[in-house]
Image (tube, rainbow, N blue to C red; front, side, top):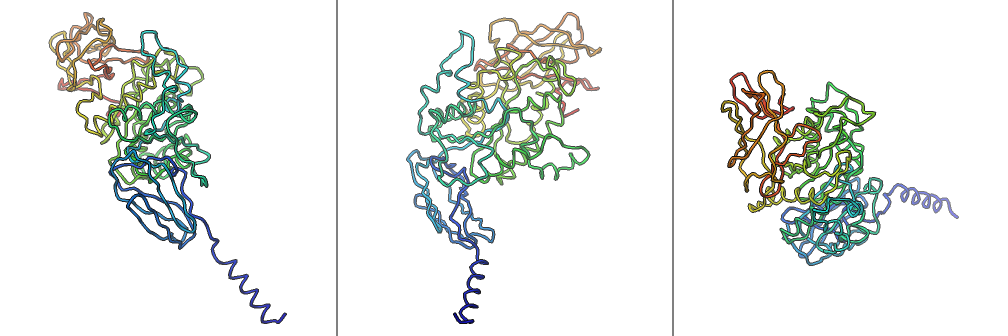
Length: 489
């Protein structure tokens, strides 16, 4: 072998070693077979491949081309599509070709939180409710087989890893549905019943989780509010593997059912700020400051009787936390559902009726996002009050139906206080669109509160069947009485 030949072989081997390895086109796990694409929005499709590789994405009559960057990342954006329940194929071509089959176009939502959002359809089938209640949702697993409802369950250990088989999403039925979030499924079912378009819902929830792990660390670092305090709770722990990899998937909005773990810490204004931080963080990740965010106000529970808590708790811990949740409604494109009626046992942190949670969240979306004026999304919400001698006249924000006592009994859980600031039980009755409240022990009432106890299950409802939101008022020096929240104190 000549010296020249030996040198040439050595040079060639060195060149091959320094050349980038050829890599197949790889998609994130959220892009897979059976998925639903969000209608009427630009549609990002993204992944990785060899740096500098040409990638083509085709769906229907659309075809987009791009070249991967130096790190091997690529992304194209398909033009908005109209809803379609006809299965189609999404084809991604580079060095290899990926064909995602049975793709629909409709509405896509992301559901997240802790155990009450994670609460599975399997558990839903085993709950006990009063014999007077409609039990048909308990057997939903036996009937569910609508191919237009698709589900994706996030696995915190797998979402960040590539999925060569692209198994993707599932039709909401059988074993896949058994392990899926009951609130998220019933939300999707209610949306479908009204919209009649394909619905895709993603569940990304962890039992027992506080809010901090669902927020990116940089979101805390960029907010001066947190500069003077140590933020514990493992910021970013779940955001990084379970939320960030989902962006920038086009979706309609977010659902959130969380708070029990932070309520056990007796949080108030700090939780308001954290939830606002989360909302801003997620909207930034999706490059859309208007994405709807609908969430669940916590249900009655005996927090004050819990043992081994890190901080002292009392019967006002939950009402104050709910007040902190309500304060987030000042952020645009948010909505809240009330759950004071959705418990059977006051020592159960996981109340049943997850189908009602899902439906009420869906009614918020239908009324606020989809502008369906016929849908009642909220029960009575305090507006203002007037003092008329010994009687307090409470007005509520406009309702689509009248005020009622849902059990036909006198109204419960109203209290009034005079100049001594001591709240006493009050009698209350409905008069048209108002509620009249008084107490013999308080001849000159100055403030009112309603449902202000961790175990309160008030019977003031709208005729549409939705409970009134708990509240309390305060009186200013000028005598003007308004609602107050922890966030405003």
